[in-house]
Structures are given as structure tokens and as C-alpha cells.
Length: 341
Image (tube, rainbow, N blue to C red):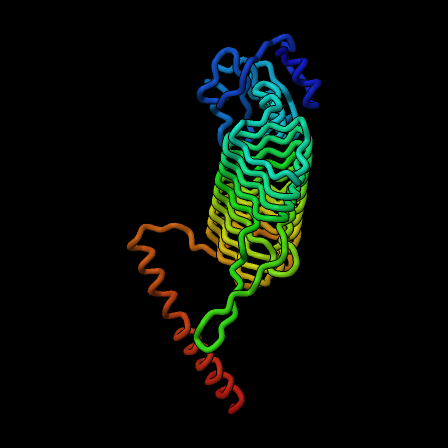
């Protein structure tokens, strides 16, 4: 595709030869003569001098750092994403239902769907237009898939789950299982029935092997345009605000509300019954025990050190309480001496 044609489709400005033809995207290091690459991080600016790409996507401040034909855009990374989608379009299978699929007679399935081998569609489920359900998915009773939803192989939707338009759920995800609701009585656990649902909005992406528990009473809600990485656990009655992105292996305990436009790094752990403000950023590996009321970046993990240095610092941290007590005692003594003068 001509660079000028790409520019028109992604809203970028062409600098250089707009007739340059590119066929695929690639990294700066591995791009060949038919590739288009991008520079989004200034730390890789030096690689522009050695890239073999035919063209590059850059920010206005970097437009003069290379003589290659280029697309100039305020957000090179987002522009790269759009270009990649154009040059490497995803394909949907033709409408079809594999002969091994089991569809309950009361289910409402649109004629334009594609359903793979051994999938199961439960009673009173509703499957919208152009939905793709890959092999061995299970759609529970009363669940609803809106138009253009994609379920990759092995997805399990428990009864009454709702998935909004154009959302994608990757393989092995389990949506709507029981939340971890137990009450203790006389040294034993009494199970609390989980009667809520999971409601997933439009344009949501749920990563492979991620689990989202249904609500105990109210619903668990994943709002529009939320992006969830692989192997995330979201507990019952959580609400994840629109446009929030959560990286892999995050655990979110029940009844926590996470605001809109938040970013949560991998392996962060968030306790239950908390509120996270809109726009908050939580670093990878951070443990959150209290609500976050103000948008900012929050970090609780100590930076990496050589092990011997870490042991020395940890030893000092363990003595901080004693040090604080000694400082307070000195302050009281000093104040007493000053009062006695």
C-alpha cells in the first residue's frame, strides 16, 4: 500500500515520498525494504540510522532525525496500531455451524454466526450477528452475546453472562464462575449463593485464562473498552471502569471498584472493598490495601538490588521502629530540657 494512502486512512501527515509502497509492519531492528516501522520511545532513536525499513512512523519532534519517507503523527504508537490493522487485517470465518455443536432448542442464534466443533449453546441463550464461537466453548443458559463478539477456543461463559458488541474473549477464559463467598460459623464455612451476573461492555478484550467471578448479589461489571491481559483474577461484585487497562497476573478481590482510564501493572494485588480513583496508575507488583482517592502513580515494590545489598537494607528497615522510638524519646528529653531552662 502507498504511504500516502495509509496516511489518509490513519490521519497522519506524509513527509517524503508518498508513493513509497509498504506491505507489512516490523520493528526498527528487523525491518526490511517493504516494511514500515515506528519510533515511539526516544531511547531507540539511534536505531533509525540503521533500520532497513522502507518507511517509518514518527512524532513531529523526530521528523528531522531520518531521511526515510515517513508518517508524522502526534501519537506514533497508536498510529502504528492502526497501520498494522490495515496491513495485517484479521479475518473472520464464513458463517457456519459445525455438526458437533449442541444448541438448545430455546436458544436464539443469528444466521450469520460461526460456531466451531463441540461448542455448547445453553437454553435461552442469545447469539447476535457475525459472532464467532470457536471450538469447545460453552455458553451458559440465558447468556447474551451481542453482535460481532469473538470467543476463542475453550471459553466458558456461566449462565446469564452478558458480552457487549465487538468484544473479544481469548482461549481458556472463565466468565461468571462463583465468587469466593463464604461465611464462617462454628469453625466451618457456609457457602453464600452467588446470584449476580457478569456484564461485559462493548469493545472489551479479555486475555487467555483470565477469570471473572459473577456477583454475589449485584453484578460484576466490566465497562466499555476495558483491556484485560492474560491470567487476571477479578472477584465478585467488582466494577472496572471504562478504558482501564490491566496487565497480566493481577488479582482483584471482591467488591472493589476501579475507576475509568486506570492502568494497572502486572502482578499487582488489590484488596477487596476498595475504591480506585479515575486515572490512577498502579505499578507492577504493587499491593494495594487501602482505597486510592487521587489520580497519581502508586508503587509499593522496593526497587531491585543485588541480594547482599537488599539484605542489608531489609535489616535496616526492620530496625526503623526502634529508631523511631529512640528519636521520639530524644525529642521528649530535648523538649523537657528546653522547658526547664
